[in-house]
Image (cartoon, rainbow, N blue to C red; front, side, top):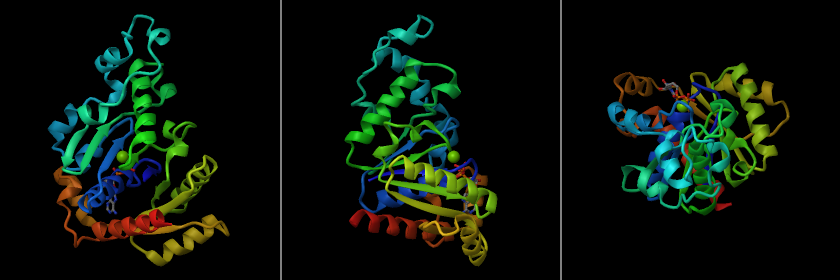
Length: 265
Ligand SMILES: Nc1ncnc2c1ncn2[C@@H]1O[C@H](COP(=O)(O)OP(=O)(O)O)[C@@H](O)[C@H]1O
Ligand SMILES: [Mg+2]
């Protein structure tokens, strides 16, 4: 099962990705969580201490590893020289950060070459890794991705079984979410779930969705606003510390149950 978590900045992608990863792993699934944000912070939501999290070098910025795997040195006309099929088999094992016995995190970083302004060996390596892991792995893979990111590009997008687009409960945010869901659909991702996060008024959400999606069918899931999530964030603690009785935990747990039903289909 390969899950893409998409949406614009600040809507709760990282929080949902982290909570889902923790829940899947606690229920006996082997999980690989991948952070492809240009400002990666999934590690700290998974409970890695800020000081430690800052030390993790994203794959897409790891020039040393890229040089080792592609033979290309930055500044040496490497745009042309580096090997396009670097070996990436061992990357999850060697560079993955262990969160618990069943959950590993790989900080990939942004693989958007246009945004990063280069055709760097490190980005090529990160991309090769993503494609490889998405093709081969039998684990649950959860990708925390920036909106409009390269993971939506051909070659990667079609490998996902499920796209979860996270939105805030505002009309503006839902309009963006609708675009992302259409895009995911066009790219061939069969299952889409709209997660409306930080909800305080569920009736209002139902109305807003009707307004924005009209007759378009959309499977949506509500995650309520939870002050406990904010509190942990303030303290710099991860969601591993969140009580199973909290609102956020319960709502993401029922999302997890929804995903399992998809899996059985
Ligand atoms: N259900 C929720 N209730 C309260 N706060 C939330 C909830 N979901 C996310 N947040 C908060 O919203 C902010 C943005 O969340 P984050 O997961 O970092 O978003 P993104 O990864 O999409 O940028 C964080 O401060 C997070 O703690
Ligand atoms: Mg994020």
